[in-house]
Length: 140
Length: 143
Image (cartoon, rainbow over all chains, first blue to last red; front, top):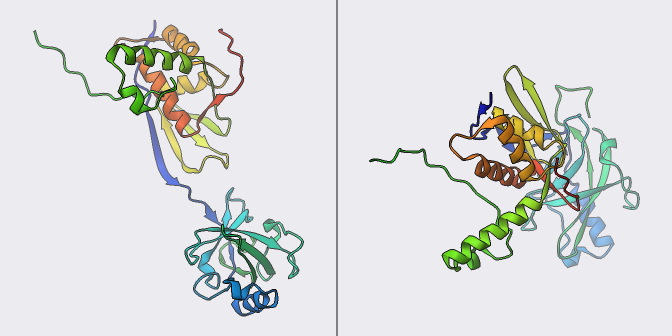
């Protein structure tokens, strides 16, 4: 005997759109070092500047652990001065030549990263990584 | 004699006939009916498959869809009823809507005559959230 057809029904529970679990480290830009770097390479006068309210604020560097394995997968800069969210590319040293896999970053490391705006300007940052989650000492 | 009251239902179907909604709305009723038939033919020629990054888990009589891939940005569990469970199982292999409809007609009694509309609407909704994907360049084989 055939079953009775009932309308297909989908119910979403605990729906949290686009919410990722943050990795357990953070970083803020050493704005003095970074402004000196921009001056040295001639970009400071072109509006490539760093300040405490933007990249210097640790809350503005958001590190994502997309698969919740305790290892960072990507970093973006939020709270920019009208530039929207910017993807960060992390490097091993101040020459900004070798891209560093974000998964290798751990608290205590000094990291270098760049952000690029849609108008072509590129910022060079430096910062010391600090731990944000003391409940999970075995993680990042 | 009074008509029997039916719960208001809304279904959404894709517009695949090549006109914008505004252009289609400007057609005469007869032209519009032909246009909708054309759109439906296009829709029925498409092959769909469930996104492999969405897994179905069963618990007693209940079934839940769990997105596990990075493509789907949804941290949640999706409760589905037995009909969606059936449809989800059908789309584990690439299938057209008419193929799934034929399977559903074998399994279910369609007393209200809503089955076809509800399957079309289900596919459109699930495609919009990337739970079901259109298979490009897939040769349709009726089974």
